Image (cartoon, rainbow, N blue to C red; front, top):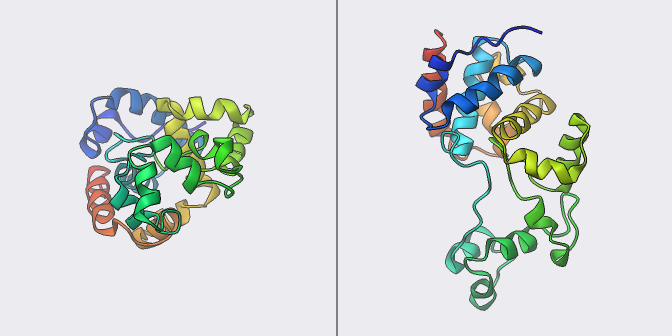
Length: 206
């Protein structure tokens, strides 16, 4: 297997995080495994992960919403103030309602929404995606949630997402907008992603 071309010093320049040595140890092993193995690919991968995770600080979806925010963000699921207030600041209940009966999850009472909430540097969400990821590693889906809470698991899920969606094709031609659309479904945070990418490309000597 090829050697990782990213150095610890380069990662420290790209991402300000107090656990950066732990993240580097995980990425050093994983990036070559997933063919994130050129300066452009590494720069774009780290930049997108840095944006998605707040510089590798948030590897689990934050669902601690106020009632007003629930109505703004999840209007379909919280159409009235009364309903939103019942769920306010109750992340587990919110996840179970918002993610019920989709992405392979069971109904609200199943608890799947919370069990398979977004985790990882590029968040993996829903039982189907967890199952697919677990299958690629040869582990039961129940173990995937615990693994995603580790440095290696959070990083590997992002590498897995990158590979499954063939994102190197965008990185190879410096297409930040294409990458953003593939990851986000739109262009949310594009300006910040571009800023991260330009910095990462500079650090990689490009």
